[in-house]
Length: 139
Image (tube, rainbow, N blue to C red; front, side, top):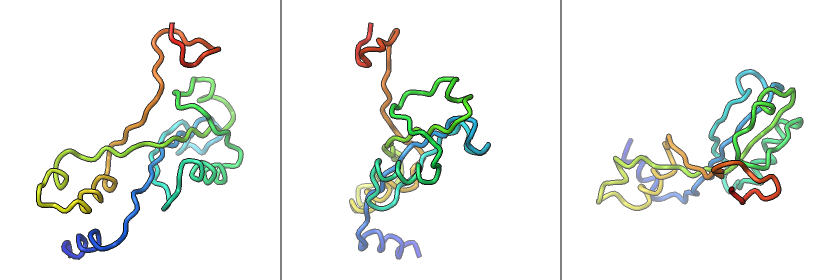
């Protein structure tokens, strides 16, 4: 059974999926989503814009946040729905199949994006007070 599994990985065309971090902020979300963050796997060929439109379709009253900064307390406690969505990159485990020399590259590629538990994303870091007129300027 395991051999058939690996044969399928080797023979079938596989797309590398996109992953997105989704934050549900505001008190208008159901309790199980309110002020929580999840990593979601997109559909085949689905990019950030399409995923964001799909999520906004599921939550038509939500407002899309256009920045990856951590939301402030006012957004967390407001009577509205805010969605924060951005792409994340899977970080594969450094042990196991990926470290074996005799494992084919297609199988290694499969494990780089499947059964992943850690993800990486970039978020701006501001040291010191931010300049409201210039988001890149640091004092």
